[in-house]
Image (cartoon, rainbow, N blue to C red):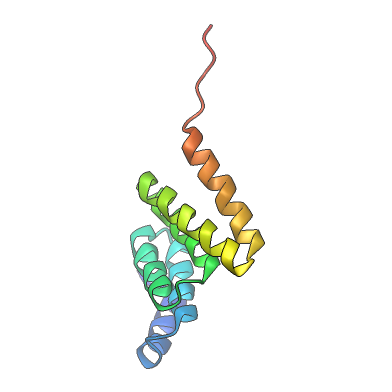
Length: 113
């Protein structure tokens, strides 16, 4: 079931389909409802409209992780880190750096007994 919030955002998007902020908001709403595939699509649209929208890369990477696309998530974090360096958006840059590091380390191994 689609929430009222998603319906409201979609209604505004129908009038303003080129608004990267609305696409980002729609992605966040989908993510909040555990609709990661739809969140990915919305975040990708936001980035297509505004490629230097740093925080969207962080959310897109997280949504990709939720659907098990770890290699794609790593690539998005790398792109987002590059964008963050150019724009000076340090908070999302630092969070994406930490997430990328965690993904590259892989799952924790239990010590041998």
